[in-house]
Length: 195
Image (cartoon, rainbow, N blue to C red):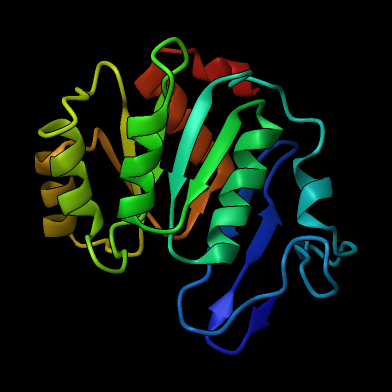
């Protein structure tokens, strides 16, 4: 489904595989559950709601506290839906400053176990945020694995993300299963739990 300069599209590629194209641009998309927020299945199948397409997937990230950072509300809600479907406890932040406050306020007995962030954030970008997290907040990759999920897809963007402290770089669009499998790999969990 395409709306003006933005698109949210999911395509069922296999029983549990979905391709998700995340929105880029400046026009708001309807929130999940609103009319028009649907995925189109291939081969002439009937459209399905994204929530229905993700239903029934295994809870491989059960109770994992995940911090998602994206300035686009629709993208943030889509990521939240994906990770909650896999059992994660999700907190969203709309910019780097909110993310840093969330990390500083996390209880020591239940800190975040995973960070996924866009790079192109207003104010402090994702590169600078990660430098702050690794430096000033002293949260090493072993305590807080991080994935850059971004439209910044050039080789130099990937190299910069890894230098700044991200452990993985996923350019948009990506598949939900790929996003979760990358996260599980960073956490040392078996990707075969996705099947």
